[in-house]
Length: 431
Image 1 (cartoon, rainbow, N blue to C red):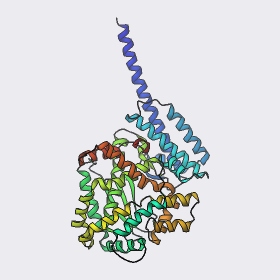
Image 2: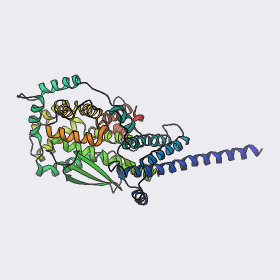
Image 3: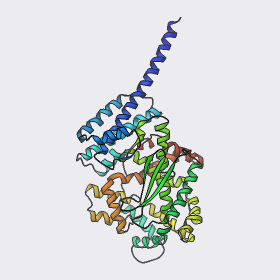
Image 4: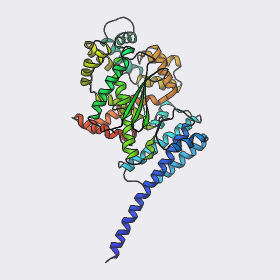
């Protein structure tokens, strides 16, 4: 009989039409999302961190000045339309794409509410903007680490903070050698990254040294596989920061992350939402977390120590025989990473005065007074964004190590890591 064959053929055509429909609709929603983010950016110059989409969209946005209430209504309308789109299971490419847009739109709505005057607690804000709940640590927790550090530092008088600063000051990179040291570090990170991740032939970066910034380093992604990496020289830069900044801002950090999103999702898949990066969004936890975790991926502890003793310490004119002691101390210092979050939580929630927050940063996070002031300026400007560095790193580390297996090879860990930073996966998908 011909009828069942004809019916079967029509069913296939219907399914194909539905499949095309949901992807077409998703593309339309994605365009609306991009235009919305551009328009929000007209109210907050820090909101759009990178844009390399159609220039006419950007120009149109600059000419308009939508009210915040109108933008919030638009965000709600786009979300309603997005929720109506049926896609396969969540872990498929289309499923991850839909979840990505939902989470990013949720953050955009929250940001609009903040611009309209709504105040969230530190934890509420972190959850709404970054799709993650930061842990809380008591002063007693940090006191235990500080006590351990006190017994690890070379003998001396004064507080732990004073002794730590005195010890660390031996490892400052001389200003005249900073560029040579940084270029040595970033070239090594780039060489190692390219052994495991295929990057476009035209990928490139430019380095600038700047002043008067609230941050120590920044990657301004320009599109077309090009990054502008800026290093803040307001304060002395210590030897460990050379590799940290080279990996975090460059390889396999922000530069590689943005290059892969552009090449794999925007250009190959045509997902227009990846032509824009809203800073205050869940994407930032993945970006900062993977950039921090990527430091250890590109240069694991033993390999990093060997590289720095052989190359960076001599180039900087520092004593390589002190490298092991320095990194033993730095490993303990790294355990204080969440102390800055507690200062931000207390200060933004109003339970800490500015003076108390500064004192906390000097006594629990071991910042000197000038760096504590700089850190508080960062907190005032970027608020709960601080969670993306430490909590982001911990979540990415847990995800990659779980996916890599109990005894992972370098190849396996790089594979899982590169798949993560070239996908639309967000914090909720790391659990």
